[in-house]
Length: 247
Ligand SMILES: O=C1O[C@H](COP(=O)(O)O)[C@@H](O)[C@H](O)[C@H]1O
Image (cartoon, rainbow, N blue to C red):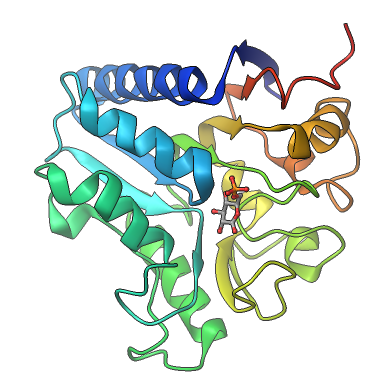
């Protein structure tokens, strides 16, 4: 399994600024090497904050040469302000020249999968497979993750079927403890297809789960613990989120 790297920043603004700089550098390097990049976005405070910082300083990213996926989505109607894709568009994607065919949003609740999150999850798994060079999931350059205070990542909450999933790459969640209850999420096996996984986490409320995850808690108890990249797993923290780490 890849090494775990921990980076601690003095405050949340510095954290998302540095994470955004790393994101830009990683995407640019992938585009230089292979002519293309592939990233998975996340919702939540730090996930969207990072995108706002990328908008301010996009560096040399070629926006026409990047595939954009989501790690999870709140299964709500198109345009709902609580959807992660709506927030990502407002923060960044509406302001840069992305190729719309390469922005792979998760299905909406008022479209062809109306009231059927399971079918939506199957459809998104097919989207992943269609861009995976004969495999089932692309090798993402970076999978961004936020983390909830109880250790959830994407919509993988502790002690749920979704976090226990070992075979499927995308599943529906119909009883999320954090509203809204119905969601679609990449599973831990899908997250582990990323070259690098970054957990961008801020605040005291997350400190205990950060320490438990880095110490190797069982993923069923602390889902973040199971989020590992192929080459690297990076915990990008502010001092509050890092406050329970030993030493
Ligand atoms: O519900 C969600 O929560 C997590 C963490 O959000 P945060 O605001 O506590 O950082 C987020 O990463 C996930 O995408 C989202 O759907």
